[in-house]
Length: 399
Ligand SMILES: [Zn+2]
Ligand SMILES: [Zn+2]
Image (cartoon, rainbow, N blue to C red; front, side):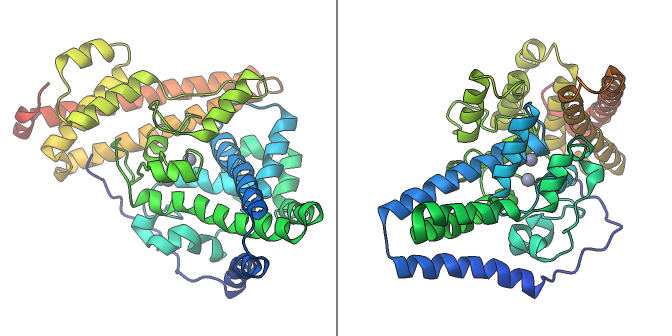
């Protein structure tokens, strides 16, 4: 789908990083490289590095990302705390800081407001610059009320390096210098860059399957390295799904472990992208304009919103209709409504998770909001499709 750039009123932040933050970041790299050079190669070290990486990568992708940022499944309070604690051993600051910034990324993906978009501010800024700049050190609690209400999570977030220091010490006490160098320093450096490539490379290189409003991409290689996060275009298309691999061959190790967690009863309510929406969008992407009457009337009948979205995507692609200002404005309204709908659905899942303490009034309010936003999106799509179809350009698009 053609991109609709929105003019930014806020100036871009100055692209400078704090020397002390850079020094700390580089020092960990130096410790890893020099440490490995001094100790020499060892299989024990490799095994410790891989195990420590896998454990913590799971806590970041399944925990910080899919649970805390997107609420794509439910956990009881103790496992919730333990997952946050394990995530903080990865030295990626506090759990609430991480989730809050990530929700911001999805709200403004690749638009001027996005704090780590390589499209807006280049590779290095999106990879690590934004973290080392000190501009975003504070946690914006307004984006995470569902998490900030837990005092134990706020405490963890305040003590952002406690868990990682204890983890490093534990590795040293258990496995000596090999534990510290391979299991902590080398593994942490790999973990950092593994996670950061999702913000940087996965908005630059790979395949775009779904016509999302951002530049997110899919990559098997990065899905293997990051336990499933490489299906980033899938994820931006359907952020509230706990599974990021949508097809059987799209390897998603984090999801397999969450699925196991569901089987043993720790994980509840794993959310998945509706197969109907995925199938439609994939079919559309594969054959661009071949949205035939058969597929639309049979598969899409029960979801008019998905049907209209697919129709609009076909028209938008074929007719390059964003050249027309009226359509461009409507398209902005459509993207906003679609994003709002997704955010509301995330809020709804979060509210459901704490329904035992809160009154069901909040759930009813959210339900009403979701219904209202769905109607808004529906109306906008109807107008878009009508206008696009009435243009002579659209005569080339099969209905
Ligand atoms: Zn992204
Ligand atoms: Zn996300």
